[in-house]
Image 1: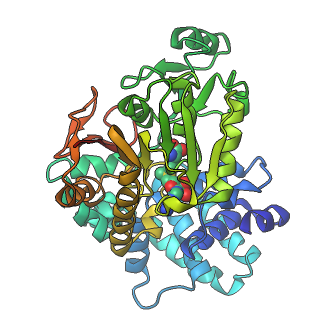
Image 2: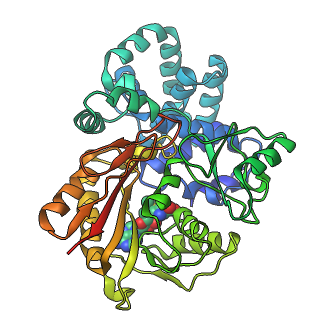
Image 3: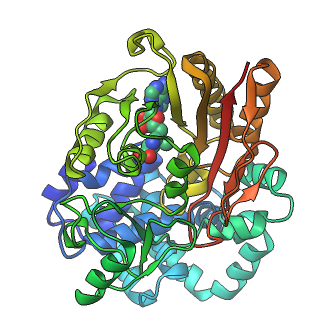
Length: 438
Ligand SMILES: C[S@@+](CC[C@H](N)C(=O)[O-])C[C@H]1O[C@@H](n2cnc3c(N)ncnc32)[C@H](O)[C@@H]1O
């Protein structure tokens, strides 16, 4: 894995590490896993900044590179190095000469000595002609917004008026937000604890449990984190459990549970007094759910690696009163946290994901009690994954009633409600509450 290899190659300069990690992501490696076993060092923050930033603006930077080198596309690792350097030139306040010098050096360290003149030439040309390149980039939608063409189309269709603002919000940096376990401490008291440690935070505006930190911190430095006083979770994500409204004594299924942000919220919300089954298809990710439950001081017997589309793998025959269906999705509402989805998703993947979302809904609906409630959740702003899925489901089922729920700060859609990325500095989330009738 890249992280291990990169950690061992201490002679590789930061920009070389960054180019290599970017190269791996462009080849299909999951971005998060590349950091997991990387030894944190003084340059880690800088490498991370370059990798995340280059991915955030990838469509814009790739367009520029294609203009500067119209005749032939460079080899993949050379291209990755060039893109990281363009990101620094256009978006970071690093002296341009340092970027050129260090990137040319990094080429050598990466075994790309033959590409040093190329890297040097294109960077110097972009610096020389920067004003005209910037005008040309701003004249094109890909250059201005930094999203692939299919994404621009889908957003325009989904949000005919708001799409430009939503795209720009997706390029911003996301805050670190905490969810307070109010069984342990009030939000006010926790804000006082933060103040006493000189950590700046403010109450969230959408969720009564949210505190937004002024600056992100490693979790080890968050007071009370390891004792379960707080959990890191975006503010819009904190709306899900109150919308599902589980009551003590109910049987609840968390059908796509990992990494467990909403599982622990279900337990906190009900003081652990529900019969909870949490499943996820990914056994490795399910371990994170187990760890979060333990950290928050709860125990849960029904934790199982299973495919929610195959009830035989987990269902014991007693219907659920509540089902939380936080489906796998494109993640277009959380792109500011996961900019790699700009390169890993395609228009086809939206269609495939939509099929999977419908399959999940179809398989779980029969397991819901009469008058029971299922909350369908995505972190996407694409209409086909949201009202698109619910609309198709409604056409095929006569025993569904929709609850009209739209907490303050969200917007009603045809069948549910949505929180729009960045409006309150929160992520984009869609919710639809389905009640079983008849
Ligand atoms: C959006 S994430 C869930 C986030 C989680 N609810 C939370 O709040 O932390 C979607 C999850 O669905 C899981 N998943 C995807 N397909 C599944 C399936 N067929 N059955 C069960 N889990 C599935 C993925 O492994 C992933 O962990």
